[in-house]
Image 1 (cartoon, each protein chain N blue to C red):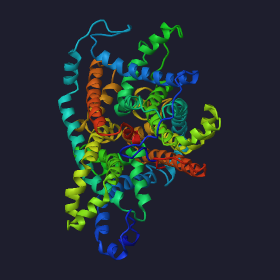
Image 2: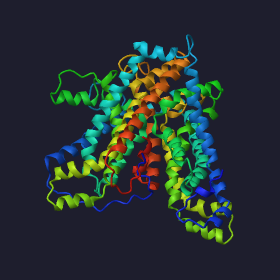
Image 3: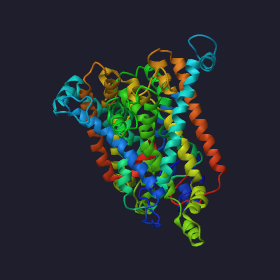
Length: 286
Length: 302
């Protein structure tokens, strides 16, 4: 069930394509073009609408404006929403790393009885959609009075984040040559010193990659936050959902403007993530 | 933890050294916070949910489960979910397989296509749902295009019904299915196909007799994960569908029982049945995969 978790994927040498276009070839690429058209239409209509003064029953809006951004910012109180979103995302990244780095080290370096079971335990929250375990989890949070608090929102976001970070980090640790640690031990370094001076510096690329991926995922994680967040802990994606599902009496364009703001944050983080990590790695959890 | 004896590193030091090395215990302790976390916030909540589901608002222990299966209002949610998840998975696998097969050894373009496909994955289904509401609406671009091309005369109703949600699930999960299949397909050693080509196998024969059997286990895993992914459809079922009708999926029902009806026992009953169906599908497919021909793949850990 592992998805290309080798830090640098080695590609087998290419089998040559025939350059003659066969019908099946055009058909397969047609699929890609169709998908991209749907995607461009979906994203494009939001972006265009957010800049439209009004847009109804025409291909493109008659005239353009940026006023919806200001209106959206005020209407949805985006300053405080973005502050909450940033607080949750940063807390999730830091706490996940704190728990995941040691765990990934142990999993990469040791084989022990029950290791497969432990891996399954970490794999399940990542593979299974959050809605599956989100409802009992959220009810438990209400029971424990953790819901409707900021720590509660952070905690529930950690549930898929920690295992995800572990699964991503294990191959990064495996990549670090064990002999470096052994050499340090020969020269009298203790385990803590080895970790601080050898493992951690070599793990920095992995840690950066995981941090950015966690930011992207936390930004987009809807269900769990939606279940336990009160009005004070609303993150951007939850606010967006509320605005879309409560639409009708709202001006659609200001919702579109918020969607574009959300998308911009996402794309910016994605661009950073792609600098640090093999893009196919992002797939492993949908 | 007497784990020293079983510790196997790539370089295995002599026994005396291994026993002297207390690092093994120390290292495994590093796993403890993560284990406590996973048990406390994943395993325990599920058990908590199980206990809650057996403690119904009224009736005996299994009353909720009986009610789920006897009341069509609940029972039908399984069907509503399956009829989204299965077609979406079939469409995506059928569309993605030829494309992944084409691109499996392509160095150029592969990164670009991957990045473009990653994009909708990271946007999340809420944003895709909002975008599709614009794009698929009566005056949206899709209906305009269909009318201009003369395919339909009046706008097609794509939103607030089954089709809107199906389109959303297909769009949201296609990148996942494609990239997963691509990673399995490119893990197959090209030497087998070359050998077959040397002996005169046509492109179709190479695909049918070499690649497809080698890809079968990966295909099985992809299909089961895609099913589970589609089974968990939630925000798009509300935004683009009829959450109290044709797209009242198990996720929507669990949510609405919990946070609209405040019937926590019934909500956890639905959630647990949902988890059970997902697990059964995963386990069945993994068992099936084990019975498939052993594969020769490089770089893919099954």
